[in-house]
Length: 423
Image (tube, rainbow, N blue to C red):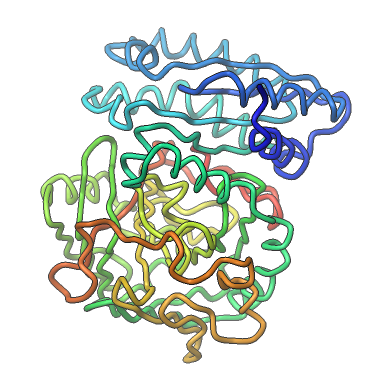
């Protein structure tokens, strides 16, 4: 029996996200999920006059393929899938995961080799540059566990988040993007000892409202590379290649992370930031505003969109919001500034544009939760381990690395269709 929520999401993905046209080919790549959603996507693609193709993936099998894979094996795999991708005009990636740590322990050199020999040619050069694409997570019991919710409650949350009115959000974000394009100095203050200043002058600004990621709801740019000064203390949880981090605190001088600490795995944190020269500089600054996403669940496609959040990203900059930073990493770290997380402000050129997670200027209030009919406080329970205030224990930090090659990510095709995250 068809689930009407699957039908609605399929319609959004085909009609709004990839805008499939008659005669176009769309590849649906599905990881660890049941077939019903894929069936609805095939049906919706046919209704739009397109041709659907399916790649069915299992993460346990992918782990077996990745472990100890030779360069020749990875290169041949890449050649085969690149041939297929070149036939596509659109791509939809459905990322389910029965175990979020399934790939933990795969040798680092094999992870890097796969990114270079498979990920780079198939996804970051061909798919990102030459298809209309959208990537989304799929609800699984493991995701519900991370969100500390029942499976049923998480599914309801998921479909609320993923089927909201993205056209309305697209209109509401325009004034924020305009303000960011005019701004020079940004000041982030709170919670706790967070006190960070930087410039975004003459860096492109990209609003994200459902074209390349679902869920969506952010507007991003990048700091001028050497302008970042001060402290930022993240307060959401993170998993990086299977390693958990919490309470990440970064100190900056002349744009560079000069001191990094964490509640646990501090050695691993600093090793990540020592990946290359660019890993200690920042490649992205973004403001999140999805009204249904209220707390972190260790999945960056959700966490970076949290209402009242921002993220600050050590590593590589995107080409279409480019500050020149290059790195093997792009690590979105999330800070929530709503009152239950300690509060805080974002200022542009001395004007506070958001306080305690709510936008203040009249032209920005369309991005606040109540503009979407979401009452403040709904689904807002923070993680149990979150500390609300104080410099020493600000909750935890959230992020997910994109294992991309060391060049800048492929250019996004314009403000309406940013390739924000080729995850």
